[in-house]
Image (cartoon, rainbow, N blue to C red):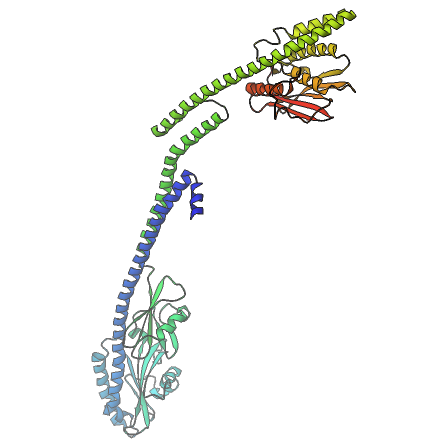
Length: 585
């Protein structure tokens, strides 16, 4: 949880707003809408299934009444004495004709009273094994009914369906009437025995087409392990688990709701058992019942999605009015941190953020004033240090130079005396030590040239200074009194009695910056004056105090990106590297 909180804290305000909106707004709305849809869907399915179950139970009751009529009729015919006389082998033709007349009246009475619920009149066929056959219709064509039925495979299948039982049902068999319209039929068969004996005299077969019992064309029937589909369905379309569950359905016309295990979301099945031990299965597609609810659900999802998008857009605009000014303010802070004092930029924001901007501008103005004050104080401090260094240089330099001139006068070297006096005068002139913090590099080189000439008079043939600076760089701005202290350091700390000293002064352009190097082949040393500058200057040399002062003046005028580095090793000389911006005067 702590890790999640830390991760959430690193998100932007806009991201957190969108996440909170989704978690507290869109997601709950979607969950609530989906839950309401599922509950409503289940209620509709349950209510629709209950209504369909009641309807199925009524259908089963009607079918059972028709089946019961078949059974009652068969029982009545078996007990009828006239039926025995018709099937009696000893009956005369006159008796048979009389009995047929009576049978015709009896059959008319059946049609009016017993089969009143049937759309088409059921067929009652009496088949006698004694060679006589009687029926409620005439055969026509001169062929006897017995002959016709004997050669009818459909009738023989019905008659022999279950000969071990006195009464049985035969489902889904072809029509064996003279019409032969091919419609499937249902028959109830009653075996007629001679009274008090096991002698089978004949059979009474009562038949009717499927349409006389079942008005719904989309049902399935299971009888004696055989599945039959009525209407447009196929047997293969009935799920196996539904068939197994339907076979376990109870008796008495009660229906059972079966949900297929195959994940179907479109259909449930209702099953019930008829008096004929036939399982009645009715599919109930409920997708159409949910079409209106699904439209409302899709509309709800669409409205939720539109609301989420609209909320995100409005939130994006709202957060943008906060984030954009804050980013601009952060940008200004970075500019201030980089030394870019720009307080004139206007931020378009709400009044609350304008107060923040006003306070920031006031702070930047104070910081700018403080920075200017600190720079002036640093400049004055460096100038004082610089003047102190110059005050130390002047007496020693004048004294030593005058002593050298005195020696030249004793030797009569008038030309060298003139040159020394000219160089000393130039070096001490106001052009070198004027109140100008920056001068052109060529003026610094001229002062360096006069200084070297004075030092060569004092130390003849002890050292040599080589200047290698291209004319294109001689107009570059440099702090005054820059190169002379570095060359002085090389002379005083590098001269060796065993070999002459060589000092190289060079400058070049490097990636938009000006680099100047003062290198010598002197004695070198392990001291790092920039890291630990001495408190006092020793002898006539600038030592570390002068190098630190030069570095501070460079950074004061040009920034922290520029400065001075010092490198020296015993026996391998020293090198001072100065980096300045490309800024011609």
